[in-house]
Image (cartoon, rainbow, N blue to C red; front, side):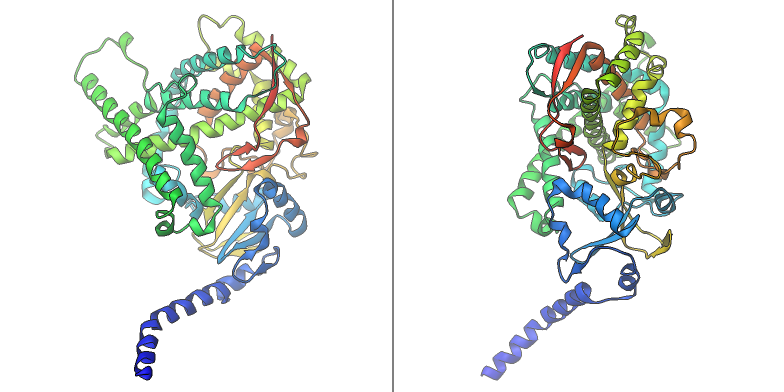
Length: 504
């Protein structure tokens, strides 16, 4: 009887034994690919868990990459469980990785935003990415961007009015949430043609869900046990994520249906050009995909691209504007020069409105933004899946491995940027940047998968910053080095951006 039971147990457990052996081989075995990867320098990796450094506080992660770069060189490996990551911190290896159409697929971490964004431009690859990129590119033509300037201006005026209550009070304020809500208003109006009034309506469910989704995504990324979908979906985090996804998707879907009806009505009706409404990104997509030469985008594809534009376009620019205010508050002499520049441009523009030509005159402000993005890139790291065997410098990287470009470390290369921790906008004077390696400064990524909306972002940041420093003087609070940087979905301050505000 016992023998029969033992045979049944052995038979029943056979698949589990095979699975266990497979897992152990994956974790501890050293196939040819692993042997190649292990030729790269890097910290000691323990069995099963990999590098103990993956458990370090997120507050020190970015600066510890700089420490490892000094110790191991511009390319080094790290392992989390069975997954290897190759960290790249030097311009010429970055160029080798992302030049041309090789290695355009994003790394596995991008799967965590797919429930929200689907396979929009950020996460898609292959033919879908190429066709959508071609379709979307005209939406960022300079004539379209000029039409968005009015929206930038209107929402920055709301921001100015909100801050006015705190000016000259000697009160220390965290300016981060004020700027972030302004950017959310801008991105929703330019992306969907819809005012959500994030700056004035604290009860908006869509706004709450957008912020909560971002938080949940970051938490999932940092907890390896939540990576498998079947586990995550059973947790309270997974269920909450689903609830907020439904709110965001339902909102976008309803806007799409409304704009489609408007588009169809206008297409069949003769409308006086002077009465035509401002076109949003969604309107432009509808127009582009209705072209006989194009395959129309489905409603799901429209939602994916609109949600992607929304996701990529508000947190990144909000972070950039906030970091710029912080840097200007700690460098009052640069702030005053920037004020004099924007004053010259803005003094006579209150009635007729800004143009792209006006913004192009703000050359110092542009250098301030560029230097801010050098020190505080909104996206501090980008990931790629090595799709073909690739040589990076002296090392051979096999197909299938994840590569991580640390933009944060790349921008602090002392061979390219002397005294890299010093805030110096004049690094971006033409005579100082002419001979710089083209991949040494990539705040908007680089290669064929660079940020399609980088001009949109630059104009948006110029409008908001020029209005802020034209109306207010910002005074620093505390020491600059005390501001802790957190690499969430964007590089953000752990505790906010604290300043004092004074009227000009």
